[in-house]
Image 1 (cartoon, one colour):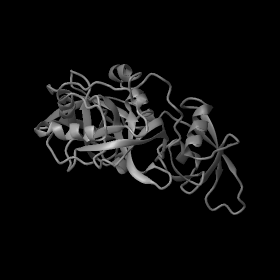
Image 2: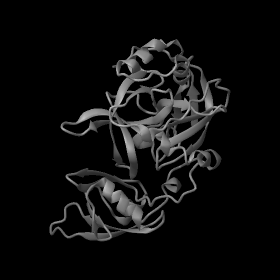
Image 3: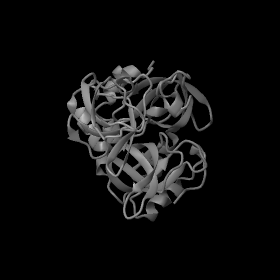
Length: 335
């Protein structure tokens, strides 16, 4: 069910509650829902043209965020603010408030920013995303758009592998999709935050036939690192080795689609079209397996032996390519 268009403060609460009740859900108190919907804000950023992510993510980015701190702390999806030179938060009345980037975590994809002026919005409470299972009804809430609130269901929980060397355990997949997914809030029946919108996918359900939907980053991934992000802009744990590879897979084969400019893989001679056979003599069976084998070699900075079948090879000889990994944070132009 897709709810009618609304402005957050003018939203008819009965519509959201009816959507939950229609599926037999124990609806939250109206005041709780009202506070949550009011706490969803717009996020807008400007990114320099020479930023590493400018080509793939653009220089003007817009999406959603949700207030999680009384001091104006806002949680969003990190790619909206990554390498940004300026950011702002937009309230339901359309007023834009300048904001400062607080932190970014590549492992989860979460980003934090803080308003430089009072928002006067109640922080949302965190729920337990580990308790979400297939069939649970949730609300996906964005700031603005034709349909800001979508009543949707959890259709699967599984590992998600992203082509940018990203691996998320136990990701939340929902359907029907929300088309303003970037930074959208996933809200449970008790009005608590369960996840942050990251992607539109064509396989939220894989069997028996692919069904489109969204991928949400579970809020449980933020809990152990939130304080470190606020204090130090990034978690203190060692970074995974980053190769600067963009990959895809077909029938278990991992192939290179492109390499990051001036990144480790490019410097080592890896090219688009190369097929990755293994890591240090151990065959890989898909992107998930590839990332796990690379990360098992060591932390960022370690030399990673990649077994590659180069594009255009005539004798099908597998080559060993040594890639000196980097910390991705050091490659990005972070402020």
